[in-house]
Length: 393
Image 1 (cartoon, rainbow, N blue to C red):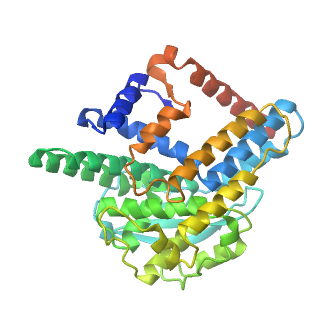
Image 2 (cartoon, rainbow, N blue to C red):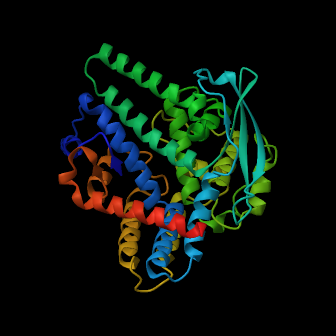
Image 3 (cartoon, rainbow, N blue to C red):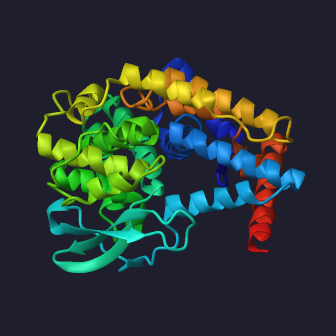
């Protein structure tokens, strides 16, 4: 986690607030930034798909350091390319903003990852605003990670606003939060990242920003964690939103594909008509799983942990094996605590603690305090650059 405009004191202040359970509106900007990045760290370390990516990274680093071969290095960059769909020809008309979700329409299609080794199909959307085509963007892992991070930001800020004692000040703060994050969601410039929240809000009629991100976070967290063995068991939708695209995508999957699962979960919820918001702030994950004919979260948690533990480095005693095992076990520990829902129904201030205990924060404003993490960041950036050059040879 690299913070260019923060110092370690910003995190220390937030840790003190967390310890006292007294959060200060004056630190809302630094809290939002740290919580956002810690959520990305969480999804990388403490989800099943994130753990698979972690293994890919360290297998590639071991190949690089041992000069054994390029297989794992190529596999890493192909995986990243496939998850991001960075070969898709994105088109966006910039500067469109409209907070009324009724003015946005979508057409969905499938494209092929022609430039990646696995040649998988994936979904893209043609976004229209008031009937005018304004963007074509793919649905990618980036959208899932981003919806989780934005949920954490928004929920922290809303909880902080509700703690304000002055009613007028609370309403002003709440309106500012609504305006800030609505402008994020319904903004053509950011559709790559807001894709998941956008379609969740629209198709399930969630005009309220908080509820849209709560549900989007729930679907994203399940999708990032669902073991592949359950892909054949998930309920096949009738096509109420995507007109059969989800079933076609599920039929061709041969490995983890969280984006396909997100679309399937969403479509099944739309078709079931289940009321998930009997409580304004708490969401029952098991209701979502039941509507998709999946086991409950306790059963899935056991299956996910078993699969995480079975992931192992390719080369024994390779240079990066020890650090991989440390990272893997740290991620499993976090997952064990927060589960398949990724901390959904608890205060997102938990991400302050996750950032503080990670040992992975770099604060550019005080490099002398963060020499160790900064050196690791510099090293890993150099490794990435060198590996990219290797696969081009």
